[in-house]
Image 1: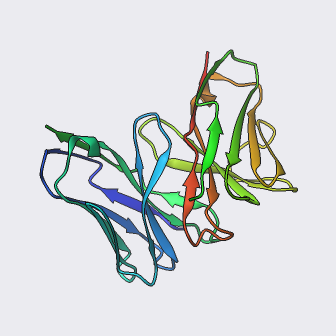
Image 2: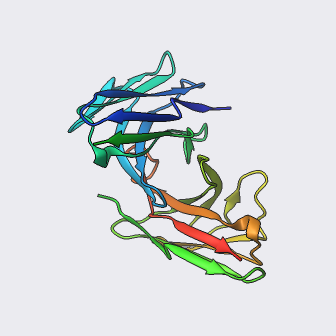
Length: 112
Length: 117
């Protein structure tokens, strides 16, 4: 059964720092991995989608990498800003390839 | 891009009443939609898969008679929480694959905060 783990559970940094969020999954037979952002009481905003054939994806200050063989993905946020404060979730498709299995998320707080 | 609209964004209801939550795909057709539930400080847990024109598929432990799902068209799925109780208070989010098999990822609604008093 696929399990997704995110470390750390919470992170507090001053503005301007570069940071890395980690995601690991137990079953490497995935065809993609998706990173989301969730603001308190809100839905999910898709940040990056990495296909299994890709090693990384970039969008602005965000860079996500994927190492399928080791069951790991990282989300790198450059020059963090207070507006980046949110919970970041990673998710992979379930075995049926239908819905997503989520980690518990990393709650990020960036202070000005 | 694919957009999913979910309503209402929040609802308060009395114990014993029913609440309907709507999930619409605005610019694409979704033969399949997914309903998740999220408790405070917990991750999203899949409740059920909504299939257009057929019965929903429920995850283990989810009561199908309590959480009624209807997917009558290619753009609308509804979740009705029947005879709601305080323990049903949670954040409910719907999702649809951005393409037929989710190869291009999944799009989520904005969620519905349900509070049962």
